[in-house]
Image (cartoon, rainbow, N blue to C red; front, side, top):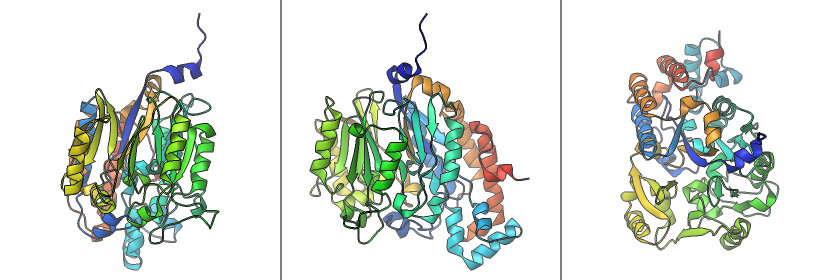
Length: 458
C-alpha cells in the first residue's frame, strides 16, 4: 500500500493557472484618487455606470472560461466603509454620518466609497506550491500603504482569500506587511512568475520602485514609487522562496513619472515569455541576465517593444502591457483592452506581433471602458493563482465561474446596480442600503459566508 506524500502530490500533480477576477462593486465611481494614475485623474468626477462596469468584467470572465481557462470570481468589498468613518470620529446614525462627512470632507467620503478592490492584481502576492518551501500556495494581502482609499482593503482581502482557499493542507495565508511607507506593497501588479510550465518550479520576479532605506537610490521625481524593495524581499521570505529562484529588479523611475504606477502597466509575463517595453526597467540587461541564469535549462523568451515601435505615452494611454498573457492550446493568447486598437501605433504593433515568430498566437480585445477610465485594464482586474487539480478541488467551489454562476451574477448585477452614479450619490443612504443588500445576497451565491463587517453587526 502506497504511503500518501502530500509534498510529492502537490509538486507533481497537473497544475493550471486560475484567473481570479474582481467583480466591480456597486459604488464604482470616478473620484480621481490615485496619484500617478493618469486615466484616473483625467476622468475624475465624471458620471460612472456601475452596472455596465460589472457586466463588462463578467463578459471578459465568461469569454475566457468558454475557452477552457480556469476562471474564478472575487467579490467586491463593502463600500462605503462605515467602520472607517467611525474610527475617524464620525458618530450617530449612518445617515447622519454620511451627511456630515459629505459636508465636511467630501474627499474622505470618496475614499471610503471607492470600488478600487475590483483591481485584484493589487489584492495580494501569490506564490504557487512548486516554488515554496512547504509546497503550499502562499498568499500575502497587499497593504497598499501608498494611498488611504486602497489601504482600507487589506484586512477584508485577507478574510476573502481565507474564505476561498480554506484548506491549510494546500494554502498558507500571511498577514499584510506593516502599513508604513518603508514596506509599501502593491501585490501582484509588481510581481511576475517565469517558468517552464505552471506546475514546474519557477523564478519569481519582484519589481520595486524604490529602496526605502537607501536614500542614494534613484527615485521618480513627479509621482510616488508605490512598491519598495524591502516589501518585496519580505514577501519572498514569508513565502519561503529560494534566493536562487527570486529576482528583484527596479522599475525605471522615468516610467513611473510617465504614468506607469505599477509594473503591470509596462510588463506582462507568462510561463517563459516576458513581454515588456524598453523603458520598463532601470537596469534591463543585468536583470535579464539574472533571470536567464536562474531559469537554468528553461530558455527565457522576450518580446521587447522599443519606443520607436510604441512610445511610452501610447503604451500608457492604451494599456498595451496591462494585458493578460494566457497559455492556450496552441501558443499564448494576449487579451488587451479595446483602446489598443484605437491608438494607431499600438494597433499596428499588435498586427506585427501576431505575424512574427513568437509564442503569441492570438490577440483578443475586450470592452472594459468603465474600468479603463479609472486606470485599470485586463491585467488589473485579475489575480493569477497557479493550482494543482487537487488544490482546485480543495478550494471553495462557489467562486469558480460556470454558465450557471455567470447567469446568476448577470441577473444579480442587473437587479442591484445603478446605471448612473455621480459623486453626490455617495452620500445617499439608499446607496449604502442597496450595496449591503446586494453584497449580502452575493455571499450566498458564492458560498462565502459572512465576510463583511455589516454582516456581523447586531
